[in-house]
Length: 257
Ligand SMILES: N[C@@H](CCC(=O)N[C@@H](CS)C(=O)NCC(=O)O)C(=O)O
Image (cartoon, protein in one colour):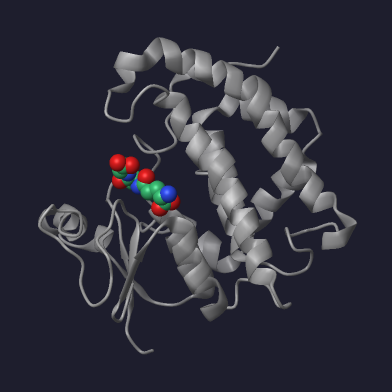
């Protein structure tokens, strides 16, 4: 299909849209991104698809939330679904039969634990309330997350990278780089790893210094150093972490006892 790839996502933070940008950037393909539109057109490019009067089009049902991805007549939502669509087209979903399902499981696990759970540390009661209206609960949740969940997640990723079945790294599927590595990079560190690092720098530093998760931190460095990813991270297309999934509230960045 010659149609352009088009990401439709809110502007101002990397957000969930970042996982889609990273797979496209790694593959070196061109794509449209409404975050590069003139400022007065950016938000509308997303909200038009979410308006009550929008009923879907060209066989596609209406959407609940961005990111959305458009390719010809197909317009789909859900981050992991979009990645699963692009992975095989861009050669980033493994090489063996059924690898796509292995890669999808890894990506979903990283998104569950290092993206969705991190989001819930600053919005533990309701997404519609301001952080300031759930500060106490947010502090409690962050503390528990850092104590229990962060080591559990990092330990899991270290185990995958040490697994003989997967060739003991450097990537999650051994020698084969896939989009799951990109999701783990973005999730665990900025929106998974990169994101968690932004939100909880002290806790992540403590985890790094423990030496227990070396392969996970090495993977983060290796993804960052991939030529297309490095060029993208240095470009003005890479947006800053601010008020999105990963937020830095110093009072929540506690060190586990
Ligand atoms: N599981 C969905 C979650 C989508 C999502 O929560 N999108 C956010 C923006 S990043 C949103 O607009 N949520 C509105 C809502 O949940 O009401 C995905 O991974 O795409």
